[in-house]
Amino acid sequence: MNAKLKVRDFTMHGTSGLSILHDKWVNWVIEHQNEKGFSPENNYGLGRISHHSWFVNNDKFEISNEQWIYSYVLPDATGFIGFEQNRWENDNCVLFDVYGKERTRLTVPWQLTRQLNPKSAKPPTSFNNISDPYINPENGKQGVFGVTAWVEYAGKYYFELDYHTGTFLWGTEIRD
Image 1 (tube, helix red, strand yellow):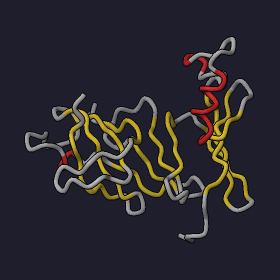
Image 2 (cartoon, one colour):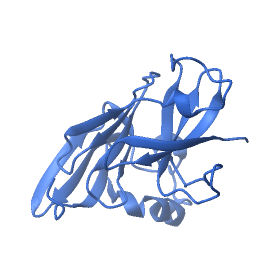
Image 3 (spheres, helix red, strand yellow):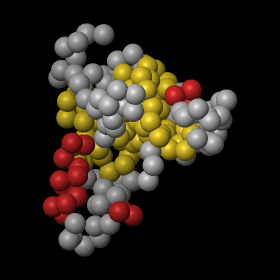
Image 4 (spheres, one colour):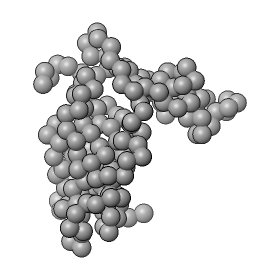
């Protein structure tokens, strides 16, 4: 992969006709929360997210949002991570390259759960979302990038992910 290629201007497009840069979304919601018709049910004025668009160099790309409930640009902007909606399987998370092509499909690493873990990651084991990094319980160091998952018989977990290789490095149980 060419290290110079980066995603820029990742934009969410709603069925209402509104478009918002993904990294401006939270601030936009805060600024417009007192407007009429502005509610979580209406995705804060966007309606249903119909598609995402972005640029690589000067070329524009788009991807439909029919299949993806969450899509995020990776921290170094070398691609995306997406979570499939309404698919409660152990491989519902995908890493994409800068062009939106599937690079790696991730499987919930049940082997990184606590010792009384299941011997498999059968449904409804599935990924939920990206997460703020947790602290590695083995060495006390802060993680860098990770995802959360529900692991059947083991509970909710954070898994530290090397998104360049698609490898899970460690996991920790999330206790609410």
